[in-house]
Structure formats: structure tokens, C-alpha cells
Amino acid sequence: MAARYRCSACGNVTRFDVVAVRRTQAFHHYSLAGDLTVEDESVLEERVSEVKCRWCGATGDTIESLPPAATGASAPG
Image: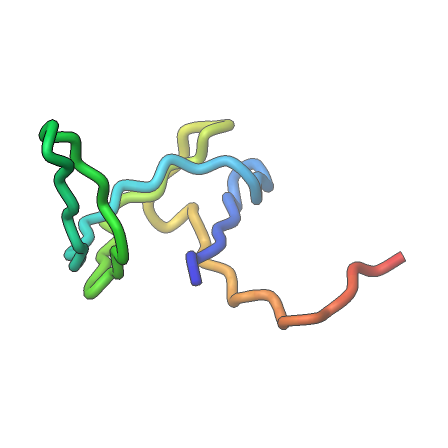
């Protein structure tokens, strides 16, 4: 599950530029014409190196990583 973020500078919780390095395994299927279709891709390892707020440009300790939302929880109201 992808991490969720919150910018403590401006309150943004929806728009971030995330730079990540991923190591994946995938099945590459080439047609006889040479066209590639990538199937069954799975992420073996992922490391997030930078998260930047799209609204105010804040980075580093200003960006908080939020705990994942509970599955099946309903929104208040």
C-alpha cells in the first residue's frame, strides 16, 4: 500500500511529488512485430528518496508520513 503524506507547512494531504527507486520483477512479452507488453509486474523493493509538497514546495521534515487508513472505516458525518 502506498504511503500517505501531510505537509505540516500548508496542510496539504492530496498533492505531492514523490521520487522513489523501485526494483521490480516483470514478464516482458514481445510480439513478433517487436511491440513490448509488460505483464505480471511486482515490486520487490521500494525506497522513497524525496517527497515535495505540490502546493507550497516544502520538503524534508515538513512532510509527515501518515499511518494507513483503517480498512472499511467510514468517513465522519
